[in-house]
Image (cartoon, rainbow, N blue to C red; front, side):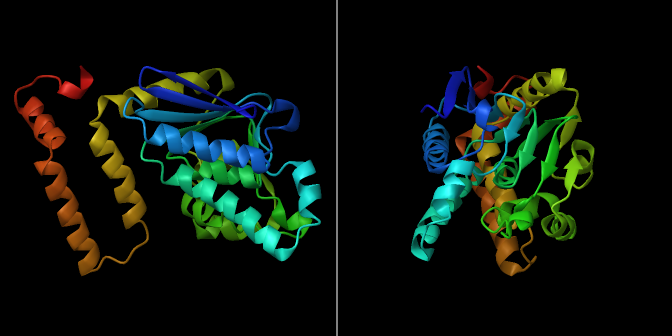
Length: 259
């Protein structure tokens, strides 16, 4: 994969975008590589956490200009197929069974906002800027919208989708798009802290919690949802990991998954 590198150490996998000269903008090849990487890593039992990072001054500037030039000549059917591949990549990242962390060291524009929004935890350098710039090109952030709106909320999305304003990391944190903003030299320390927290928890419980949030968010609290939550807690309590976690707590010993 010439567009990114994948490194696995201990229980952590790091996927790094490696197109700094192009501000890590993506094209059809990058989309295919990201889809394959997250599908493979998500299926590996030895991977407990996946970090999405990037080289250079920008995290991701959205679509590659050369790719956009090719798209200008696409038919509607070509555009449907192309957008479908991007949508599949975003969904693969969002639904990855392993928890994901975005390490945002630089600016995030357009489609890059979708990559960040799909990750479970996001830490940003305080100097990074964010922008949903599509309307300036006569376009809309349609494919990334489900994830970005969940991440920042509809009220903020109304503003930033419509105005295409660039906003700061501090504003991104205020609206909930990122979780932590730190000096650039503290990015790795924050990532390490989250990796330790995620790795110390029950791996099946972490995966189930991720799925729980995705399934419950913004759904009506009705009988079907309540029954679903009842089933989930009963399943996890009856599982080997659930029993081990409770027993280790009661007997004041580390759980086996830390061994």
